[in-house]
Length: 419
Image (cartoon, rainbow, N blue to C red):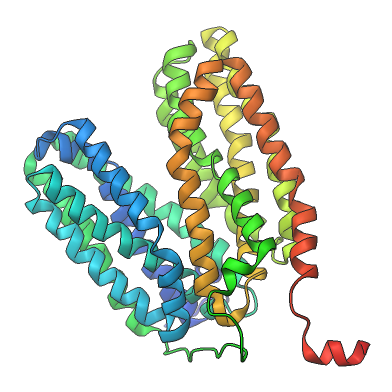
């Protein structure tokens, strides 16, 4: 048997995938799940409109209703994960999603799509909060670093799933679209099965006489949630706003749209762990938010400037802007991991992740309307306003981190030593 010394490429891949068995299991489960998401998300709209035959307006309404209802399930789902075990709740949520996703092949009406999508979104919100709590248990003393590693494989899984969806879109048959839906359902089931390989982590007891819904009383964390949700508008900038801007306001060729997705995804895969490994404490997270805001302050005007340059320069300017924006995305997500995990008490990670998911989900729900009306409506001035908005949010990061750390309960030993 050939042994790897740990310095070759297999050693590097092993370290990237995790330092322990449970870390590697969670990385594998996350990767499988995101491959399935990539398969489905890239073609879901076409499946509902072309195969099922629903009008686009009805599809949008069904998914919006489902998303809004699902937002409210994260906090109680996270609390359940804290009290019953994150692995158990996560596996149950994945089982529900697998069944709901498979049931989509039977959809033949708007009502059926709305009902099934709502069940899926409720399970997704519960699972998302439980997943955050599970990351903390598996990641041990460095959950933010482990979450950065996870995100690397998440991005890679989405890329591979999107490539698979592209093949199905090229075939353009009912069978190909149905295969994508069932492939996503299978990914949920396989992800849940992989979680059986994790140990049964004991539930951490809450301090006596502590309120049940502690996260809703934590003002610094609620402020961070609002900041995180608002800064999350940067994600649809690349996926929604910039493609519309390129096609309608610049001379850049249409292939630039595909190239920007490749640059964004590839950069995040390559740099997430490298940068995330340097951002672990809440204080480091606050400074990272400020860095992200400054990078967005640079990238947004570059995107706006592409509308005022000739065709030979527009494509290069857009790609350069996406590169800078992707760098900001990595800093912003790493900051979110450090603050989101670092400010939450160990016994209530699920509940806190549910609060964070609610804030982020609300921001993502509002983002399309804000970006398409305000930014596109104002044109170049809208891009500059967006850049200033991101910079202002980032500037608040260090002060928010200091407030959060200052208001955390002090360890009893430390308190006695200073008494």
